[in-house]
Image 1 (tube, helix red, strand yellow):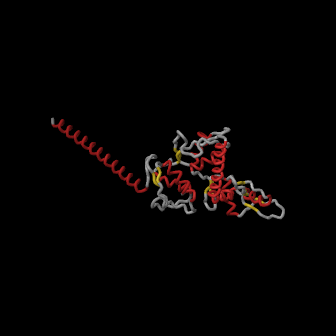
Image 2: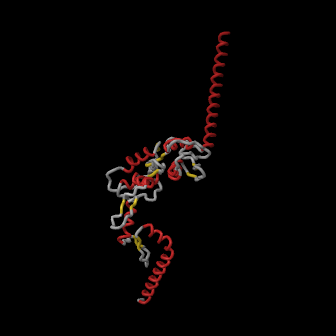
Image 3: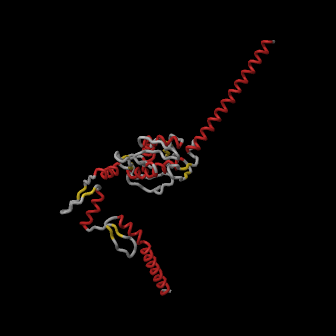
Length: 292
């Protein structure tokens, strides 16, 4: 009887101990959750891709519905114009790293996600740890190769459904959505979406001007071929860009000058166009009355 009582007492004590341990573990987990939530509030971190997000880079406070919306904004507007110091400017963070890749890796501490590069192709939604992985996914799974036509089906794309005749062009266009600029100048750390643009940029450091004007007596040289093409119109007198407004016959050697012309003079040109249209309508009405 005494042994039975002893065993019962021991069993009850063991059960009470296990219950106390279970309660302690629950309290410990609750404490960990509270500490994590507090840390997340302090750093702007979210464990849910679908939570509302606010950009806390320096003085930026733009809000986004999800991390998928915030990440491209961050890469396009803040990280691609980074100076050589590579300081993190998220909230009150003062961490300095030694390169752009390290900075991107560090930012996951704030964003609370390792897979911060989301594919927003229609009906996709996969996530990736790097630009390279996302770009490879887009290239292989969505864009493809060997087609006569390509389209961009990125969510809310202004060119959705419009045709690209070359694969290179649609991939370049997709970079405007992802914010990817994989080519980096080794001298100033500025980043570019295409290697040829970076090559042109490098000439601002070296002073190289490989494109020479072939016209006799002209010694002008240029760092990019497009600048030489525009310059040669000085010699030829060619003005291929014409104003399309009715009644305006101005032509320009550069498309940028045509854009300026339209921007500054379009109100006047538009008024002239409206006046001409009204006159035509009035004449048509008068003709119609005459033949009644």
